[in-house]
Amino acid sequence: MTISMYQASVPTFIRMLDNLAAILEKAAAHAEAKKIDPSVLLASRLYPDMFPLTKQVQVACDFAKGTVARLAGQEPPKYDDNETTIEALKARIAKTVDYVQGFQAAQFAGAEERDVQMKIRDQTLTFKGLSYLAHMALPNFFFHATTAYDILRHNGVEIGKRHFMGNP
Amino acid sequence: MTISMYQASVPTFIRMLDNLAAILEKAAAHAEAKKIDPSVLLASRLYPDMFPLTKQVQVACDFAKGTVARLAGQEPPKYDDNETTIEALKARIAKTVDYVQGFQAAQFAGAEERDVQMKIRDQTLTFKGLSYLAHMALPNFFFHATTAYDILRHNGVEIGKRHFMGNP
Image 1 (cartoon, rainbow over the protein chains, first blue to last red):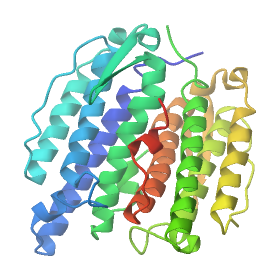
Image 2 (image 1 turned 135 degrees about the vertical axis):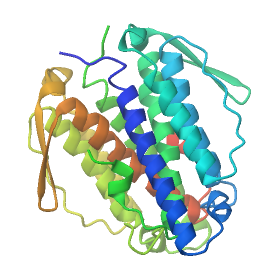
Image 3 (image 1 turned 90 degrees about the vertical axis):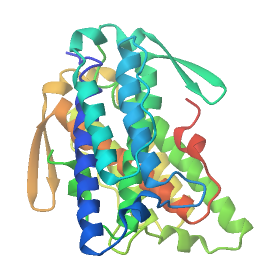
């Protein structure tokens, strides 16, 4: 009567990344309709020392791919942070979804007890897999996905909670 | 080699709610230092048809208590949405943490397969427990917690990701 670490992570990442791609699609349509340069949206931030939209999406992708890799005991792949268009960000999301979907549930066997290491700036943090997922990976992933949404909403893109949630 | 639905939900809610209370504490200190009426922060939104800070915190609390109640097969308690101060919001969070902490892991036995119903406006949505947690409860909870943080950041409160994450 339990769930696997795979079930607690992979479907959540895939659904949310798909929703994020759909939100970016709406942003592209909004920019075109309103004759807004899409790069203005990509560079938008909620505060000067917060990440802009582009970086929010990149980091959300990185937490998705990094989490599944680490829980499966693999080294996460590095993606260059070189996206300058909404299309390119959507492609990065698609590449991330492909990567996440490539994992099998069996690769997550014992992941809840696996030692997971994560470098943040100069620090190396070590977690057990479950603690990593519950207190680092999911909060960060949702943080960046939500802030991407919030930036677009703040800029008047006509999206709503249903786009963030997808069709649950 | 699996985890329980309790492990996949209760500790995450408690950690994040505690972090949210600490963020509100920082907001209160900021308002006092800058001679800002705290009610201005509480009424702030990222866009005119988004929820203000107060409602973001209320809804985050409601997803935490509603999720654990539903996963345990109970009816969630109703809290009045009557908070008008930062102190009152912190008290609501504390009440929610107490409620969530009151559950025992055994009450979540079989929760992944339990039919969970949730009313949203006129609709009643029905999920299996796992799908409810992964695709409805956690995304919504993190959405509102993150947007609360984003509203305060956007208003210049000096908080950072470390306050959102707590001390993982």
